[in-house]
Length: 586
Image (tube, one colour):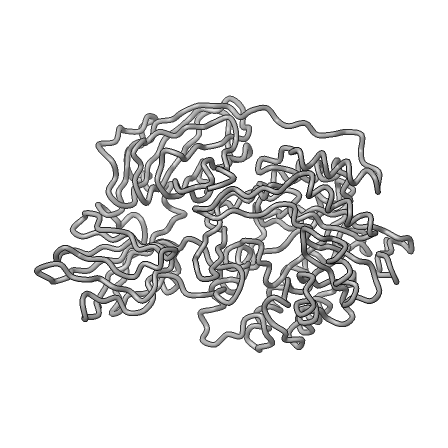
């Protein structure tokens, strides 16, 4: 069997120096039927390794569960990497950041009082052990010394930016070893002295994360890693976007020059990202450094392979740089043709406020519950408010967006990003509030915070008690019409929906190839094709299209469902020729 080790100055593969040329490709952000295509294009760019995170919360949405079906089939992914003749790096966390909801940590971890997340605390360590044993049960037989592709396994992730609990880091490393991992372990931190010191672990190879000033950053890394190979575990070749911001890109020439400098210094590299993919469903995270910034659905990242897996100018520039240091295949992938364009009318609106019972389960509460207590990402709260005239409605904090209605009419929106906490109710009546979780913070101290309306909710000086709550089952939204007649042609709308409204339409497909759904004429919401959740859209941008993977389509009739939370002035779906990720400047 192959032997992989850390030498005095190099990685050693069967005793010979080996440079890792890796690209990040997250299996959970790419449809499984597209994995082989993306992996093959990595090989064609000259890479010899694929790196992936593992998202704990996606695999274990409930305590005691571990799902590996569909897009979460890590074993299938690693075997496809091996089938392409490439190696693999696995980064299971338990924390991953990755602009992923809650940094990959399950929300249920934080429901226990004083749970010591990301530190050596018995309950947290017990949960981490259960999770890592589940993950590494898959990875263990696929290590390179057992005939598989896995070269390295990472301990935690950029821990030096969070804490300095060496007992915790050692505990995580010990769990990994106890799970049968025999390949070398690594840590990663930004090349800052304090972070490398706090996040590193003696006996474990330190690596860096950076996207510029390669020589300087490698020198800092070498101060903390006196022997062994130098490696940039995250060579940032682009960046992520947030709702309301610009679309981020990086200079192709500058990124290629930095990659050249990194390789010229003899370092190994993992390009973050090779192919970003998509935050399908409600998986995108957020940042909050004083202002809440939720991440968009696209994770294009301005990577060498775009969101649909097509090679970009950066792909060809990186391939040319790599060719100076390693052989690259003769075959170069071509970009796919433009996507088919078509339109489909949306109709048969189903309004949440008119008849909420099919949307989810109702419950009664003395005090307004949080979304966490309801185990929901979207909920409707209702009660009668007695007041003769205008009165001030106040909340402690909004996490993250609340749509307020009175007797079925919209009153206003409370938005976390604006730090909204109050609005005026013009009179008494039936108060309804739809509260939306827009993504959990994935970096910093606000990880794991409770979602919903936080703190007492008051009308004037009086706290509002005795609420009815409907926890909306978003997975069931595409099936809202199942108990009603379902004509082939949606029934025309009788006007713009008031409050959250589900719409449906259908479109024909000759061949199941990738498509792009334009959302520029819509407000804010979520879309599904054939029951597959494409993710969120929002007219504030920058993203103006949702990526529709070809494998979720079928030849013939396909179904589209849209949940509009705001206003859909034009209930028509337009599929366009290519992606539109928005302006580069605002």
